[in-house]
Image (cartoon, rainbow, N blue to C red):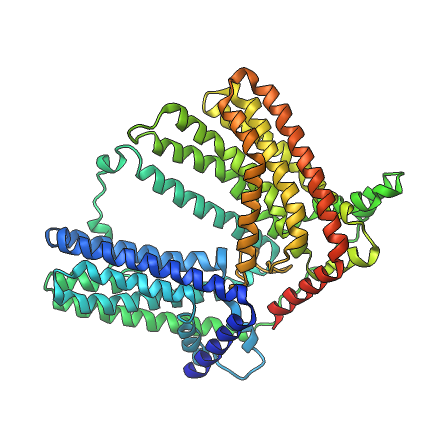
Length: 544
């Protein structure tokens, strides 16, 4: 069974690379980046192993256990909440076949290694062997421990994803995954930056040894403790840690098999009945007496409904709130560097709001893709392209503009410079409106695969992101280029010019948005059937 599942996984992997040149290029670039990082890590660990580790073998062993445990926790938490494992071999697809979870589990775990995340984790874990280069007797146990530790990561990732699949299939579960995922990323970054600024590390009195000792006997840290025990000459400890690691992996595979049994036999979740109520889109259209604005208001009302209920849209909102906080913390860490002025630190802190505005505008790059095949309603109803572009923008402007204004005021007051609020508001709104204009054009020209309706909002589409990366980078570059004059004025002119900068920024943003609506509308009118064909193709990839 293991060989069969592996062969199936390899065939699907090769097919995905052959089907789309952009996918192949993106995968090669990602693989080259991973290889470069692994080589850098290996060289760094080798240097540490030759110079520092011989004098600090016990501490090195403790930190390897802690780092390995954190890696296991990351594999347990991040796949179900954020990325989702590559669901090419989704267990639900095996439900029609008479298979037991115990037979299927080892093959699915082995298949986790056939993919960039699994390979990258194994290579990164293997580089820790070089920490013991000055103690050759510890290198083989450390390598075996790294392989077992990586296996634990793969099993834990599969297990938590399968167990939480039922929770994440509900809308509330998906919304919770969005909030938790953003909080994990933001919290981890803030803690890391806080620990690395000033003299925090010098004043830290935390002794990691007791934590490392406890973790070394748990499923998280047992495999990573073998290298340190071998370096200390404790061969009984090496055997105990590796034996426990093997036992833990077997127990986790058994638990995964039991979870698969439930996933393969559980009936589909019952859907709740829908409530009958008057359609908000129809009500919005009925409020106007001008027929030309019917499509605009209908699209805007539907867009507002998406922003209120669709977790794929809501997934980006926590990031917008965290960006200013991240920039504030990063600016404080810059302040301890020699030669960095207080003025530069202050302006870097303010740039978080402008980054949030830019990101909010570019969220609409995926808007048509999020519609998926339901976009045929626009095509058959003859909705003008400009009405589609303007309606989508208005559906977001209603909440984004007030939210960005409040964000700017809060940040400037928190930094003790409320006089900077007018210029910052103008620059932020300019970045947002310019981003909307750019997205209005690019989203009609470049249709790339996105998460389909009903799926985990932050899951992966099996690597089909080459075009997405190019489109998003192009959108960021175009927005920065068009926004740069206003941004420079906001940060370089005197504070007394704040309201003038604000007015000019908003006017320029509206001009760019209007141009984007016109150009994007023409692209939608000219490419309507082609857009529909791409949406059908992207939807069929997910069901293939």
